Length: 407
Image (cartoon, rainbow, N blue to C red; front, side, top):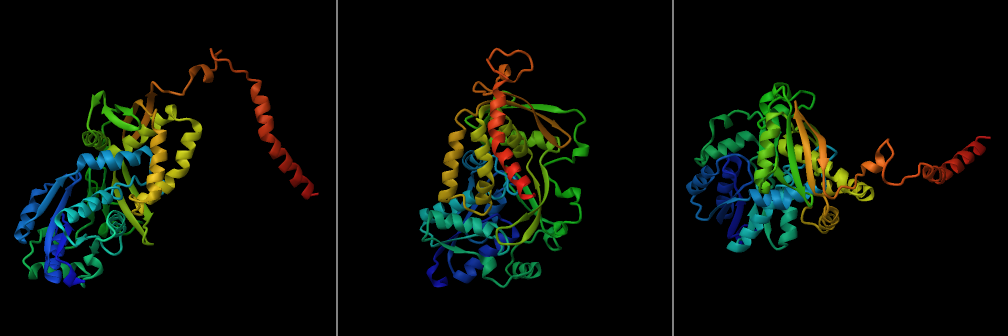
């Protein structure tokens, strides 16, 4: 296969691992490498990645700001579904991978590359997400996964390879890194090393976007989020672009210690792993979206969404964003959002984000129906008697059968 590869597009962060991969690709495949670095709001300066790529003699270096596309076309559709994997995880890493892989494939097509390459290990979920996306978007593209091919199986061997090839090593990389971090505009994800024992509390220095709830302000803060067709469009009356809106909510949530999660999850590849996540803006957005849906969605629609949500979330976690079943579910979800519009007020305090008010021009909530006083809408309390009797009929029949069986 090596002789067939003339050009490869590499997902390149500029860090040690992908720099080693870059050099390894050049040596192993004797091919041209195009580097692609995506700005998804990870909060790091990306120009150093360009300088490192130039050091390796790379001529075609792509650094792209994908923050708006990331939030508008990936994060927001996912939040319309209120997606949570295993009831807790807001899928911050999972939803970023299909966008990165999509651009890898598109750049490969633009440049006539034979393959794409990624730095995901053979133990994780990301290898699946990158490669399933490639399969769906271009079945002919080859994927090179160095962690599944090379013999650099330990940190020591990686460092030795880097030194032998004059690859710069950050000083803190010479020892065991305390943990690894993946970040984007939706969240930070930390795992490994000091976090590998799930029986030990994560040290506070792991958290990068949120203050400890105990150290958060002693006074609550209220934030009002506006929605149109299921997507957030404003914060405190100010219209914002998708990425700017999420960035604003991240700052508010981080200040109040919102969005921390310590989770042992089930990876798609079969093992359990412990991750520590921070999703401050996403947590606020999730609660706000549920809040606006509570007054704008019909009961049947709301309950159906809740039934399909675990399946939808699992598809994203397992790398099936570009699959027919995810697109089918998305069509159903998006149809439900037609009248999901209005404003939700969230109270931020000491790590919590609670809905305290919600209004909508399309509200299905009727004070006249629920009031304990005499309502303007005709509602005959006696109607409930027949309703209960009919619903109780099968229970009476079931109970009578059981009593007869017991003698």
